Length: 112
Image (cartoon, rainbow, N blue to C red; front, side, top):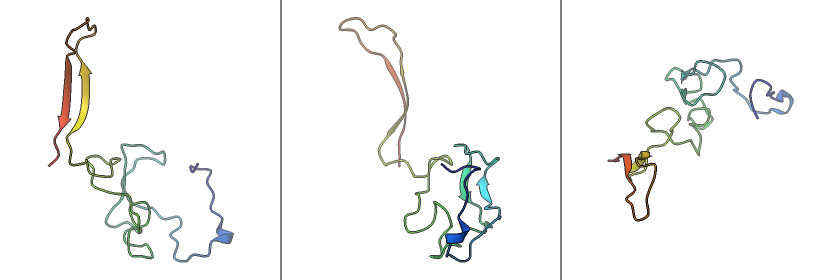
């Protein structure tokens, strides 16, 4: 799927106004290898910004069914739900005797 060996069949492409061999100007991408730490949103001066036939951004963040945006980190593209979210959970006791108490430490984030 995809990658450096992907080819584009130009012979059957009937579209116009394609942007070929142009830097998309992603917000923060250090290499051509996908990484969750990169931010693939388009910079304001990107040639793909508002360049779609419908006036939206080219790529997954534009079009009629754009990928949601608004998360806390680049790969989290949608905002957290309005419910509290458990971020980490750590079981504190390694052995639990019969009728014992399970000791759990939880870190959560409240949404507003």
